[in-house]
Length: 385
Ligand SMILES: Nc1ncnc2c1ncn2[C@@H]1O[C@H](COP(=O)(O)OP(=O)(O)O)[C@@H](O)[C@H]1O
Ligand SMILES: [Mg+2]
Image 1 (cartoon, rainbow, N blue to C red):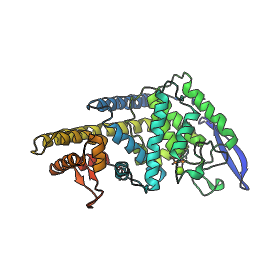
Image 2: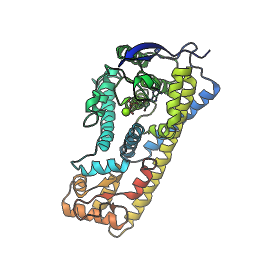
Image 3: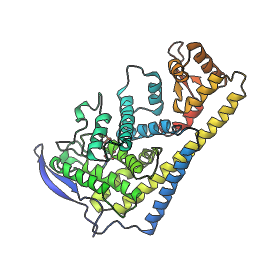
Image 4: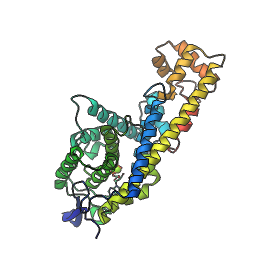
């Protein structure tokens, strides 16, 4: 007999009978999650990979060196799972140029970055919000800001029925809990996050994600906030000191299995299958992050040598080069601000880097030009186009 992970309740929505599913509170019970030898192995591998990612993040001069790119990479991919078309290149270009007509897709990705930074700040601020439903609502408010989220009740727990797959609740693949069941389900989840539990924390982060997706508390944005929850838990539980893991890459690569594993917890009580999948995704994404970090680091070292041996290597040019990891796309204005300098000096610095073939002009225009550190972006944007 598979374990039962929740209960169905029949309700009438829009004149149709639907079966809404309410998950039981965590942790998995009857029987408890079985930490088999193979799951323990996957847990060690996932944990070790996070350790390698932590070290990779520390091998560079500035702690924020990889952070800028990696956070945006996660933001783009988690939004792509939702259907957003923006690429990482689009987002970085926008951040450099701040054109006024921001496409909605780019806005969504920038909103995710805002939501993540906001929530991380709250968790570290002495009087900030703790990990809670309220914090997730505040994050949701930021995620749903602007054009696309306006009618999705930003920051609010839903008060109507939603569904997953299908055109209406009646033919949906999955109908989450009734609206009146949602607040209690969320407070159960919140309580469990702060209660002692013998299960390893990395596994708990994965269980929390499923529970959140199953409750589906918002009208939209549940996937992104549920994945953001994982990032916050990794921080809160000291599994990764900085948000360097772009876990959504693995979820996107294995999207059919990702959805199927979420469903199987409900339909087959298969917490173990989900956990194995989750731990493998953590390992895969962390290893990808380590490889990317190493390649970026090697690229920078090599290019720095190229620059230093170039006849046009002036001090402003070297200073600009060293800032590129956090600003891989720049304009004249951003360079003037970054170097705190005049237009002629900024122009010279850009020209030097162009002559050393490190920066490339991307617009073909004579005005409002945009320069990209192509060698670096080529490595960073892998799997995001
Ligand atoms: N069968 C399922 N059971 C539970 N959750 C699911 C299932 N299929 C997909 N999901 C989750 O629902 C998310 C989509 O919900 P949605 O509110 O549209 O979020 P977003 O707008 O951020 O994509 C998916 O990313 C996934 O996390
Ligand atoms: Mg959506």
